[in-house]
Every structure is written in C-alpha cells, then in structure tokens.
Amino acid sequence: MGARNHYMRRGAWACGRLAVLGLVMFASACSTTQQASIQQMDIKCSFLGSDCDQLIDGEPGQAALRYVNLHALWTQYQKIWINPVIFWGSETTKVLAADQHMLTDYFHQVLREELGKKFELADQAGPGVMQLQVALTDVAGATRGLRTISMLWPQARVLNTLKYAATGTYAFIGGAQTEVKLTDAVSGQVLAEGMDKRIGGGSLEAAMQWQWGDAKNAMKAWAVQLADRVSSWTSGAVPPA
Image (cartoon, rainbow, N blue to C red):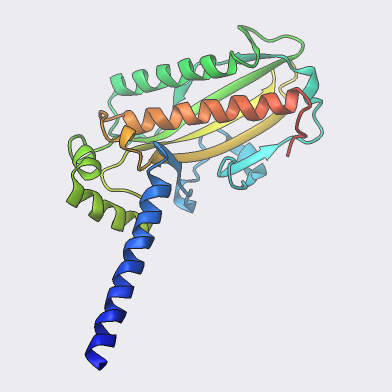
C-alpha cells in the first residue's frame, strides 16, 4: 500500500510538472518577440543624455523605462517627422558596419510604415509637427541553425522550454535595445522618451529565421506600439500617462 501511494505521488508530481511546462510553452509560443528587463549595466543613456534622468519604470505593455510630458498639448500634433535611425553602440561592438546600416534602415522603414498609418509624415519642422529621434543602442544576433533546431526539434524544444521556465529566456536568441525621444519639432520641448529591450520569443514562426530575425521582430513590435500609443494621446482617446 505504501509503495502504491509512493508511485501515485510521483505520478501526480510528474503530471503537475508536465502541466506547468505545457502552460509555459502555450504562453510563450504565442510571441515572436518578448520584452526583456533592462539591467542597471544596460542603462547607458548615451543617446538621451541628461534627459535620461526623467525616465521611470514602465507598466506592463509600456517601455521598460519611460517619460511622458503630461503638460503638453498633445491634441495639437497631427504630423510627425521621423529622423533617420542611428546606431549608437559601444566602440567595442561586434556588429559590422554593413549590418548596422541594414538594421537602422529597416527600423526607419517600419517606423514610417506604422506611424504613417496614424499621422501625416513630415520632412521638416513646423507647427503641429512632432520630431522622432531613435537610436539602436545594442543589437544581438540569433545563433543561426541552433535557434531553429532548439525550437523545432522536439527534444531540444523541451530543453529550451525548461530553460525558459528557469530564466525567462530561450537559448540562441537575438534581440535589440533602443532609446527614443519625441519632441515638438519647433520648440524642442520633450514630449516623451523611452528605453526598451526585446528578445526573441517562443513562437514557431520565429524559429525559421536568419541571424537578425529576432532583432527585426523587436523593431517591428516597437514601431506598432509607438504608433498606437502616441496616436491614442494625440487623438484625445486616451490621456497621456
């Protein structure tokens, strides 16, 4: 009888463990990219400069660190001037110049695509124009081949899910970190600033990709989030917060 109870308890533990892993896999498998926490060592503020002092921790669904000018007259802005995205990495970066150029061009492109759905795009300062300045401050490439195997090969997928359950990240992923500043194009008044970091998620769609796939997914997610958030403030639909 004692042996039977022992095996029943072990069976229940195993089932519970599998159920937890199943939930983790289900939740994480829905996303091609996920937000990552920004550590103190990541906060360089090389692009935002002294304005970085205004940043506070963001809520879920917001940038990791952010500032919003609650006193600005947001509804006066219907146009946005998107400056070219720059790469603001450290002097020791291993990202080749050609890849830096390709990634910043891509980021600029998706920002224009998403913000262009919400605002008239401007090419210079003027009344009612917001100026958007964006920098990539860190980029990491996924490990080609191993990223795919770890997501698609069943045994590797289980091990990768265990890693996610323990650390909150998958193996062999890439990602990116950005700093953003939104100002009045004429006066230079700061309207909003943010710093965020995203890494590869657990979606099977994200598995079949190349070295910079996770970084590009992060940039696309930022562009969509920024367009939705800022347009909700300028339209008056949601108060800035």
